[in-house]
Image 1 (cartoon, rainbow, N blue to C red):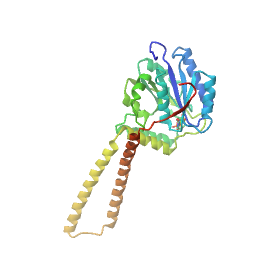
Image 2 (cartoon, helix red, strand yellow):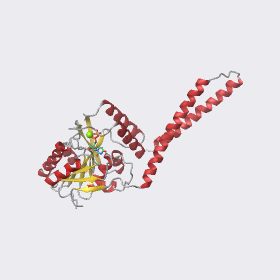
Image 3 (cartoon, helix red, strand yellow):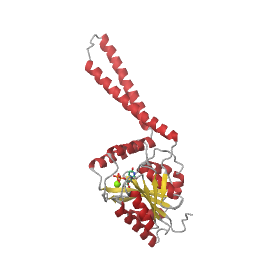
Image 4 (tube, helix red, strand yellow):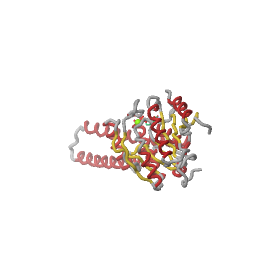
Amino acid sequence: MPNKEKLPVLYLITPCYNEEKVLPSTYSLFLNKLKELVKSKAISSESRVLFVNDGSTDGTWDFICEISKENRQIEGISLSRNRGHQNALVAGLMEAKDRCDVTITLDCDGQHDINAVDLMLKKYKEGNEVVYGVRNSRAGDGFFKKAFSELYYKLINSLGGEVIVNHADYRLVSSKVLNAFADYKEVNIFLRGLFPLVGFKSTTIHYDQFERVAGKSHYSFGKMLGLAIDGITSLSIKPIRIITGVGIFVAFISFIGVIYTFVTFFAGKTVPGWASMTCTLCFVSGIQLISLGIIGEYVGKTYMETKQRPRYIISERTYKE
Ligand code: UDP
Ligand code: MG
């Protein structure tokens, strides 16, 4: 059983999707760090690196099986299909929560500086149950991705979400918090915004983001936009309220338009006004369609939530359950 008097059992959890080019160089980084921490008596020798294979179609899972045979500190689970980064993280966290005292999630491509783990553990030992890794610099991300994400953090926080700026799923979470988090059953998940909602004592540490050691990012613009929309809809219903506000504003403008029409009619100054009519029509129709789209997004999400489908299915493990 997890026990704070003893050395904490740490699980380093890393999701992998088609990362056969990356894992041969990064797995030893994780393993060496774990061994170093065990040696310096910072963590228990029961600590593990847990790889979550997110339905890869390349040799990722075979590689995880191979290294887990050679090293008892390495374990792996495989999801029955690709479920996306966030679900893969939840699968790893839920798998680990009853077997450890503390987890740290990080990407498997070497972008998250593994040396920040020491500071995270230090903050944990000082009494923090969640430690958020915040990027100082963002090597490997293009201008567009950086600009989009800057804007996004501002937007989501102004809509009522509580997201730590420049934090990207490199995070220490204790098993105590994970037990509380296990009650969050939603399928539309955005972990960066959910852990602040769960609460508990937390802090931040800073790290430098590196380039990917190999391969390409799996976050295309479409996927990034999907995650961004999931984040907002999972944390806030303010967009629907904003629509109501826009509706009231447009109705008010229309009312003034009607008064103006009456005034010009009685003054005998009516003009054809085709252009202004068309512009107004296009503008109002545009607003209506966007509004329907936003409401539709929430209705669709509600539909998905009501089905209560599992977020992931574990099809294989490198160890016995
Ligand atoms: N990942 C995953 N499932 C996916 C996409 C990505 O498990 O469907 C993993 C990926 O292997 C990596 C992490 O999530 O460990 C972050 O992905 P990536 O490096 O492609 O994103 P970026 O760092 O470019 O935002
Ligand atoms: Mg990456």
